[in-house]
Length: 64
Image 1: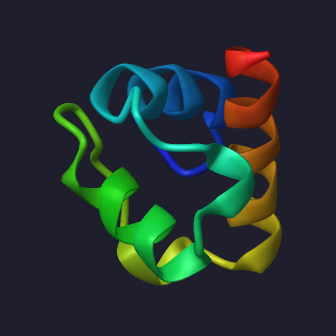
Image 2: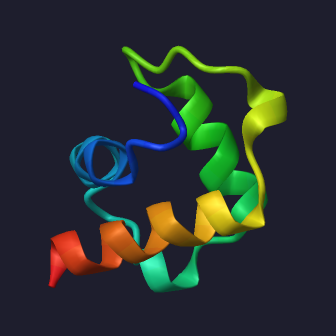
């Protein structure tokens, strides 16, 4: 998975962290959790605030 695959990342995060409220996660934790996902294969330097916002929003949409 790559940073731009926000929906796929959100689904994987929801599966990996079902106890987490995605509206309350900070971006540092979010970035670290994405990087730790099995199948994630992208450069950490390509991550930015807009990408993390997109992933967070997709995760919020996924759990609602």
